[in-house]
Amino acid sequence: MFSRIVGALVGREMDRRDGSGGMKGAAMGALAVGALRRMGPLGMILGGGYVAKKAYDRRRAARNGPVI
Image (cartoon, rainbow, N blue to C red; front, top):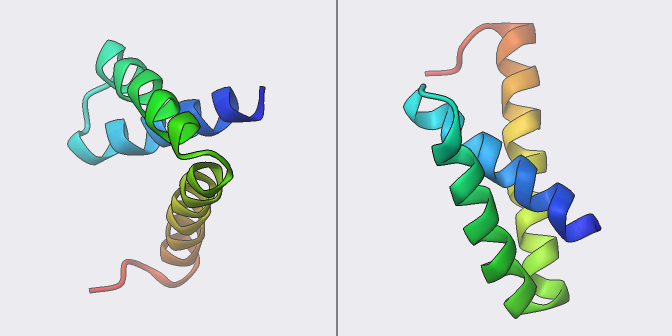
């Protein structure tokens, strides 16, 4: 279950980069889940770290303005 949540968050973050929404992010999330699951616990740590860094950067930018 945790892998599905991480996969969904990774897909959402990857989809936010290009600005369009919808099925592309869901497909990327599904592919990310497969890749992360094959990597085992290390994959879950890497995926969770990616999502956490993106959330931290977004929060920092909202608080201080965009970092150039």
